[in-house]
Image 1 (spheres, rainbow, N blue to C red):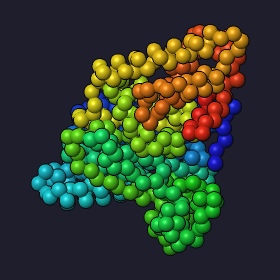
Image 2 (tube, helix red, strand yellow; image 1 turned 180 degrees about the horizontal axis):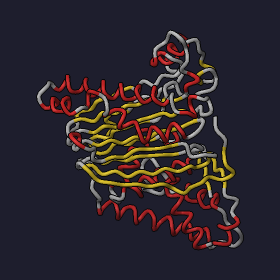
Image 3 (cartoon, rainbow, N blue to C red; image 1 turned 45 degrees about the vertical axis):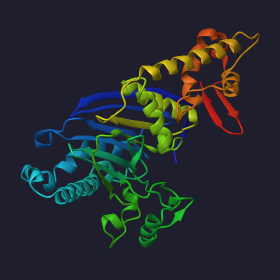
Length: 395
């Protein structure tokens, strides 16, 4: 179930890249967890005959980081090593029917997941029982015409299209009726919403202590490595795709995250910066987990808007004015007081999906500049309760 640090580790790992008309940025943060168990993959241009394709993935490890790290390095090759992605088969993509091609690709992705899961059983640490880790996985294969998203566990992929959610993967939780039925058929149980009262996801790579039921196939075990695969035909109004672990989704809905990301894309084309802003906002919203996010923009993504930049400047000028007024008061001041004051103000143009809490970092910068004495001694964790909103504010 995980242990926590006394204060979060907020250093971030970032990457970005461009390829095949796509741009991507990613951010990951250890946060409050004792260990960083997330991993990721990002390849904007695949090699060989798949040079027009891209691959992105997020892996949320548990009980250790071994399996998640291995999957980040080998899932793509496990998928593309199958017969469905051999040169002779790829060459047929252009001549065979769309339905046949899609089914072939789905079959290849499915086989790649199962092939990787089976191969990891032979890793020395795993075979000896020393390593019992596992990982969720959500990945996207993007071709010139389609987006294939495969999900195994409770990491999630969401496509934003034409001002709304185009599609979202569904989390694999033990309480889901079909998942619960499989678990019970394999001789297990679901207690406190966990497999055998322990594991919070019903599908994952690794976790081999839940995959030893005799007479059951790999997809019939207590925990299944089988991905659920979604296929979307690309459209001109596709804007962006987000792949993220549950450390993000625990505190933001699909709509919250996507509207927030879209509002930031109107201000900047720096995808690393936007991804960092998402992670920081989730931390301030109370996420206690590792957090990883890959943001992939498609050709239809919104462009930077001078009008949006103007509105953001007006908002930040007003926030700075209000923070200055509080900081000019006699006596000590803390972040709780400042955020309470701002929360009482009728601030307009707050970021959709993020709200005032997404400006917490900006407020903190002003506070530290104006009142370094108070900022240094601030207790760091202020719980601000409102009838309509709850904030968790970390120093």
